[in-house]
Amino acid sequence: MGRKNKGKVRGRGAEPRRVRSVQGAVDLHLGQIQLGVNRPEQYRAQLLQEIMDEIARIRKLSGSKAILHISGLEDPVQVRQISEEEVELFIDYQLTVEVLEPAE
Image (tube, rainbow, N blue to C red):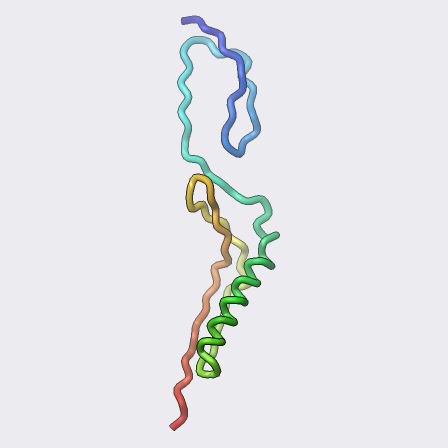
């Protein structure tokens, strides 16, 4: 069983590592794959625009019968892995809609 194996080992998103020499049987166990995004803050403007578009739709639906309170837009852009191939970017903000009662 004194086989000599030479080659490359690659991990998803990792730099290739050269294996100089491997003696005997080789077992390879892969762990959980974690995805990420370099510099997620570069997407802040796009995320803020999508949030503002949603707020505009809510304002249009509620007319002048509601006041919108928004907070947390200054929080960092966050990244969450949703599958082995996808991540989502988001800003964890809070939107409160205060419905105004018509005056009697």
